[in-house]
Image: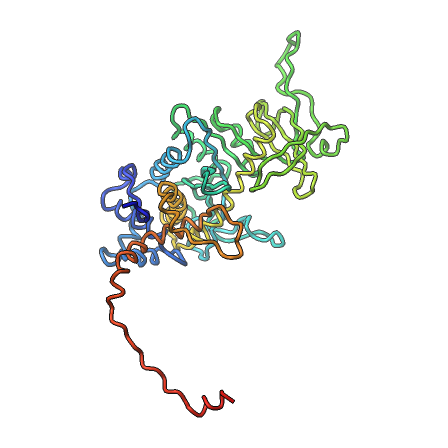
Length: 453
């Protein structure tokens, strides 16, 4: 008999056993599965009730696992990273990672690492400030053929950042800027690569700075944006006769990108790039230069991008790979938006900002379950695609042209996988139940007569 129902969503990977002791591993798997099955607010107590953990052990052991458990989140991130690469990325294909930060809003003066800081998701009409805990997140940007046309960002590692004026700071950890934390995540990911694997990182304007460009491993390429008023220099030309003194590190000063956009004699080329789900026509100008302030004496390729239709503003892209074409650079940077979608879905669907934790370890570990759950749900759906598709609900009538499967569809299928076998096994017993005839309310003859008039 052909199997038509997928296996229930579970975490039974053998490689994760080495990260925990046997009792801790049972708590970890129960929390991770419970995080996926929980509907609504994702507090720790709500997850405990969803899985019924309080019926088998004291609830304090769950909180102790988060706050005082001797396990490493980086060890889990490493094995999750290898699972994602081995399952979703073909051998020899470049690994594309995206890095960004997000603010989990909270209320409370005693929350470790919480403070007033920039909130990029706030309306631009306000001051874009929020109170909460900030996490720098890194994830893999992956396309999944036959499932969706969009790029999924699967987070696997994150680290907390706190403002200098935070009232409660992590003990024993020095203050680091967001780019410094991002560089640590890049170096950590680079150390997990195997022979023959290559890493490329796509970052927003805030992470395209000296800290990352000069401090990254030499075989890691960066794709990102730069300001229009950036100081650019021509590469140094080797002189015919070596002059006396220190050799030059940079050539003559080039016009700023903003001035190049206004140059009527600049030569433009027309290309077509696939961005944000559609193919668009763009005018580009590519050249090689030195971004001395941020990248030092390393040559980078710069692309000036102009949209003739006027839907997109003029943007300046760069890539440390001088062999990259304008279309490759633009499409790679277009994949960066996937992490913004992931931040929204982890907050709205998986409640990454819901846990009411205050201690240092709990604040750092609790949101990681939301980020790990996101990646594990996609892994489960891909591995059981042929049967998991049966649990995907039909689209709403107003989504007649919907073809791609979203993460919300995968999450709903993972939740249905736990109760669909119960329905199918007990459905045959429903017809054997005795029918219950409830007594009907006696009609008022006078009112019924009036209604007929």
